[in-house]
Image: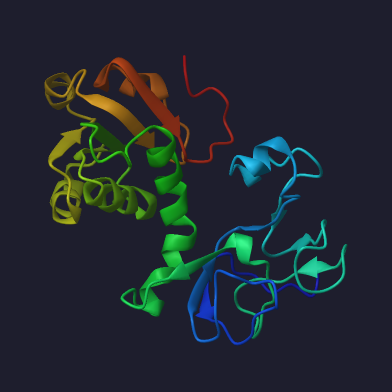
Length: 233
């Protein structure tokens, strides 16, 4: 949709607030991710799953249409992204960034960070009393973010990659164990060790190859976007 200003990982400083705003004050650091709008009224929105909005669906924070009239500008006008100079937005979709978080490092937390944090929270990893081993498949941008978040939550982290070259980086990022998925012995040694696996691989592959790493009641979450639907045979 042209003209288009992209950017779905926003960070910025609050310059003005509306009279009903309670989460922010002028001068606060704020962030916004890919979800730009939803109805806020349906069952899934009320449960905090705005990405499953039951009305007209959720609106992307750029290159989409303002569907519900919650954010700046008129309904049905275009959303522009994080590279625009000023952005008016509903406080519900914004995150207050602590002053300790450096602004130039905060951007990836708003998409990659959220993508990994959400399944960790959904599957109980945010419970400090719950012992859990979390496996992360794919040690790239998403994977390293997942390692750091899972480790910060106090969980044992198993980094899984088909490349032995990723071991050093995975351990530096906080992984407790590295598994080389190209090595049958390495896979066998880690068999049944994970309660939760987050799969960030975004190329066609056999997800079934990794199921043996789960324990009897474990869960694997597919995060990498794959066009080929033949990923489990």
